[in-house]
Length: 151
Image (tube, rainbow, N blue to C red):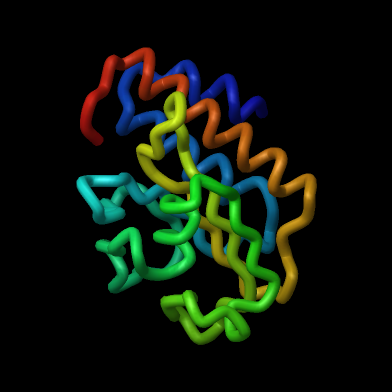
């Protein structure tokens, strides 16, 4: 399966996100929660159909809050090996041990973040980071092709 090709081949932004979430979730057994938050103003928002894993009450995250907000604000991929040691972490589940947040960038603008949680401590490797950054880049390509201005 070529997840990058699958994402880029989707005719709509919504289908690209759904394809990315399902494809990423299936990539590794320690990817326990996968979601795409979209930036709307100064708030990251999560739609029900844009994540896979246990439900979360955190469907709106301000840019100045949480690891997702930090990743978007800093325009940097953040790998958190131990969420309990990071004061920015917003607990979604007591079982989560590590997290990676990858900004989805169009030019120098963040349009959203790809967020993954794992119940495994220090789960995310350099290879995971590289692959997930490629997923974010594929999503950005669909966004640009669709001529989107807003999520």
